[in-house]
Amino acid sequence: MDYKDLANAIFPNTKEIEYYKEKYPKRDLPEGAIVTRFAPSPTGFVHIGGLYQATIARKLAEQTKGVFFLRIEDTDQKREVENGIVGIIEALKDFNVIPDEGMTDEEHEIGEYGPYKQSLRKEIYHSFAKDLIEKGMAYPCFCKQEQLDEMREKQEAAKIRTGYYGVWAKCRHIPVNEAIERIKAGEEYILRLKSPGNPEKKIKHKDLIKGNIDIPENDQDIVIIKSDGLPTYHFAHAVDDYLMGTTHVIRGDEWISSVPLHLQLFQVLGVKAPKYAHIAPIMKEEDGAKRKLSKRKDPEAAVSYYAEVGIPHEAVSEYLLNIANSNFEQWRKQNPEADISEFEVQINKMSVSGALFDMVKLQDISKRVISRYTAEQVYEETMKWASKYDLELKEMLEKDTKFSLKVLGIERGNVKPRRDIAKWSDVKDNIIYMYDEKYFGKKQNYEFQKINDKEEIKEIIQKYIDKYYNENDDKETWFEKIKDLANEYGYAREVKEYKQSPDNYKGHVGDISTLIRICLTSRSNTPDMYEIMKVLGKESVIKRLNEAIK
Image 1 (cartoon, rainbow, N blue to C red):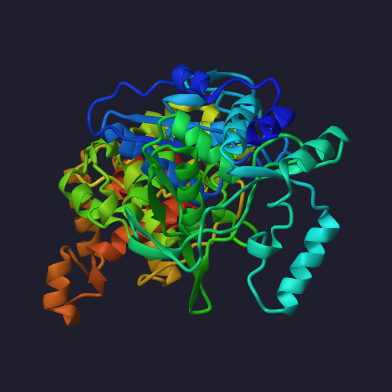
Image 2: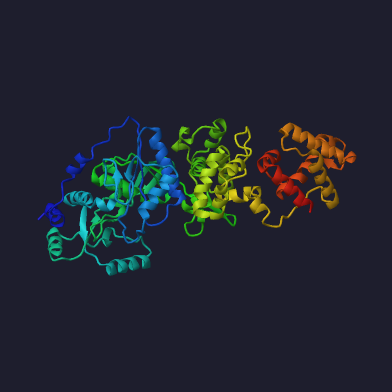
């Protein structure tokens, strides 16, 4: 009996691998086109690091007129969570990282290189495993878990490498006829790679981000097909990346240690390996030290967090490109209105060490992104968010849509638009004082600034109501009247006048306008006061000023 007999005993009815090579021909793409993939397991929420990798992979494919596909690696079905696949698909959609091919929901897919769910590709893996058995490059292993545990204990006690290799690979040299008899007898087994590696030798590998790496060859006889007939991640990814025409694998640098094994798998399969780009993890600073962003400790590690707090997907995408290439920030300054699709990611400019996650920087980017929105866009996006997370805000906005649009339109469309909203969850606090039913419904706390004498405040506000306020004034006239009011009470008409001769004045026009602002809104920091007053209207303005006088 030979290896072919063993292969037929294990896989009597599988197709030849040539069938699959013909079924999945080489992709017809322009020269230099990159084929990348995002290949998550449906075992939990999508990590921001995963979205980062998917964003880079998508950009590289897009830039080169290549293909970006989504493959679901669900061979570890014990760890799969409910709606895990839908969660992945929705997360990518939320951040506009749309695959050209792959799963579109739990059951459906697009593309000619599927199935794009590994659990549906079982027969394909069997064909390639059978081919390896026929070549003497794979074998059945009958070791029980207790035997493997005992072997590990001995290795640890002897302080040597753990694993199934060399003299420890007990089933590697079982004669073919004995293996066939044991299989026929119904003995449980798995399939292992018969590694041709020598750990005394090193492979020289050029990573697209890390550069040249020397790593010892793999000599572990890893499991390629489990007892349930499904492949391990290592074997499945090699078969799939070959048949699906993957040219570049973009993944986290925790996989660098697996490079020798993965290159070896492509070698024994007799096919060309893709290029690897190992991305440094996103880090977080804690107690003066850096650590990886943690699924367990950090809410911002889950991409769902950004939807929950209401940070627009464009801002998150921009921030990730900012992490990816240091020249993005300069590009954005030179192209403030450009869509990020116009920015070209350069993989050789990616950081070798982990980028530090900076929430302040992300929120600054988000403020700039939102500042470019129209009032209608802000209203629409805030309503979407509030419908799910803040029903009070939703009710407030939709009660008088026309008024809400005016409120959200304050200082929008200007050369320097307002930048006070970083996320949709900021909106309520930023605008709630504009709504009379909310404003008059609670006692206001007026935190007066330079002018804080109660009698003077009453006098100035009453004078403004009686003599200077006119809802029909244009902005220039309105501000001239504020200056007149300042002058009448001994405050400089111009800030520079006060700075030149501070002893001649009680203060300056800014102190008067701040006083009016606080009396109108109970806040010292708001958008343009003239616009606020125009939106509030005469009745509300007079009522608010009289309320402050009381």
